[in-house]
Length: 64
Image 1 (cartoon, rainbow, N blue to C red):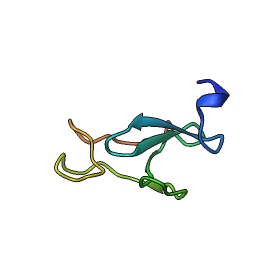
Image 2: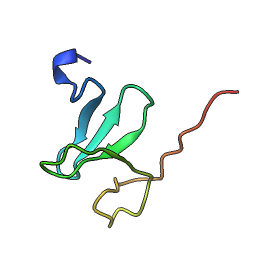
Image 3: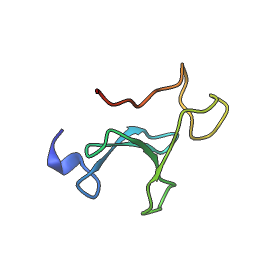
Image 4: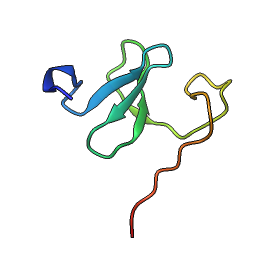
């Protein structure tokens, strides 16, 4: 990822229609409304939800 493509040196766009961004710091998926400077971490939801993505839920796990 080029530094010039990052927003606030942490986020990059993954879905323009749903305003979803991915973080390079914690691998989280975040929502930011159009024109907003706030990023809110999102969990997987139904595909009918505005902030959801199609397909199975995504699990964020840590290696032990």
